[in-house]
Amino acid sequence: SPSNAEIVIQPDDYLSLHKVSKHFGAFTAVSNVDLSINKGEIFALLGASGCGKSTLLRMLAGFENTSSGDILLDGSSINGLSPHQRPINMMFQSYALFPHMTVEQNLAFGLKQDKTPKVDIKQQVAAMLELVQMQHLSKRKPHQLSGGQQQRVALARALIKKPKLLLLDEPMGALDKKLRSRMQLEVVNIIESLGVTCVMVTHDQEEAMTMADRIAIMDAGEIKQVGTPDEIYEQPNSRYTAEFIGSVNIFDGAIVDDEADHVTVVSEDCPEPIYIGHGITCFEGQEVSVALRPEKVAISKEVPAQGHNRAQGKVKEIAYLGSHSVYHVALASGKIVLATELNAERWAGEKITWEDEVWVYWSEHAGVVLTA
Ligand code: ATP
Image 1 (cartoon, rainbow, N blue to C red):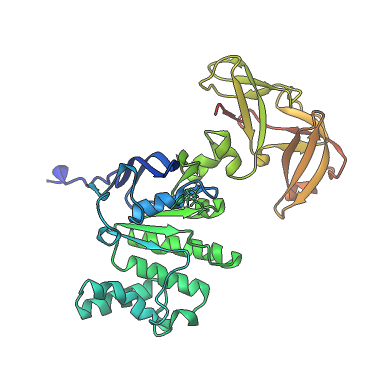
Image 2: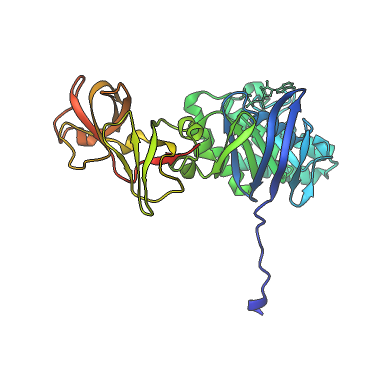
């Protein structure tokens, strides 16, 4: 009966890493990483150069052994498997296409090695060529293709065997800036249309935000935070994450009032108290930082009505960015605060320019209190 219909549960931990570490001699490149990645998810490992993201990806691929910990894919440990035994495929930054083979032959290669029947190879190659829109160039060799076309072939080759896990190593690294943003969306569409689970490595925050469902921020071999792009941006859990993603104003200070529905922070850099309109886990006297995104800080020549969340200063720089302008405002303490004005509104009020005395101010919902 319908009430007994089988419920298909998408396992929340299709790919899971348990306390995975990698040591090179005395150096720890990856430290005790726990991660759980959903089926069909595009997951990005994001971090500065040397943070260990490539090492982690190479351990998933099997090019590097784990020093300790376990990696499970679809319920089975893959630790003991060699790279070609794993149901995983990787697209390299350099694409690593076979230069002497045509597009078609590049795609067919892995299937041939698996002794797939010829008719199936033909059919699967044709389907994949269509998916990446390369049918018309199937007889070309890699050097006769543009960067974006080479990337599509590399992606098709990585996907043709329907891997349980696709790994992308700096997928846009070889493309120029203009092509990047187009290919980011194209690659996501192709991966999502096949429902393939994907882990990608990038040092480019915009790329991670554009392509990934969730992002892990790595620093010095550790995962600092895991979340959706907006969680990572709006609710950073540490100063490291707040400063790594986008630009941010940070006020160092201490909690002076800790209530159920609000907290107040006092900072030497801000002459007025900073009021946060919701409760957080903290204690009075605790040293904290308040992170404020520039687009949440307004600017005006008029004195704001509110007695908190405001500071007076002088405009030192203005960056015109098309839709909005970012003002660098120096406070009396010397602290520079970045504030934003929409350019559409710039013409409505009195125009603010260099060396003007201004106020910066923000709402009680703008600041994020960081304890780490
Ligand atoms: P990048 O963006 O520059 O590629 P990454 O975050 O991918 O950086 P990894 O390549 O994972 O960083 O390297 C992490 C750390 O481990 C680095 O400090 C690196 O020097 C070190 N490392 C990587 N491979 C080895 C190795 N085979 N032997 C010794 N140290 C290594």
